[in-house]
Length: 217
Image 1: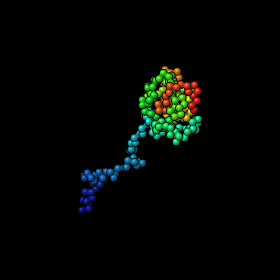
Image 2: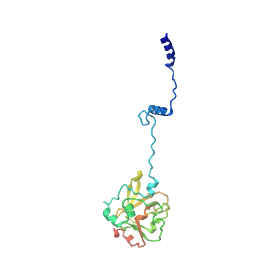
Image 3: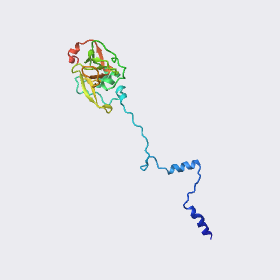
Image 4: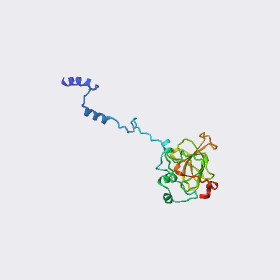
């Protein structure tokens, strides 16, 4: 009789969920132990990873203290070693000319420099690169030239920062000057803009060397 009564009482409870009130400490531990870890293979929740900053505007227009590649000195007449260049260049000149750095926009000595005559020589080897009448006001923040002394500037592909650009270097020593851009719509004879670091240049009013660009090579 007792067993029959017990079965009758227990049977309805077999399919019912009896709520149990738990303390806050025990409840949080219990729930955390039953959840799947956020990084498990079966979990649909994935941690959010911040996207890396893409060096676009800042990469081109700010100082580059960690250059990707040093200037190639194997294909230029001036074959001075790194130690020899350090001896004749100040730290900022070495960073830009030999390590392909970039000066901050608007900070260069020759950005707003517009003489009626003269020559802009390489600050490293003193080879003539640009004449005063090749310079124009571009408003880009760096000295701009629409052309160079014939044979004084060499162009080469620059794939740094994930973008293909045209780097310009001094033909005589390989010193980094900047980059050249085409088709920007400036009212110049060549529709080109040689965007050059002021640190890479040294101005002189003596134009005699331009007649023979290799005279100082």
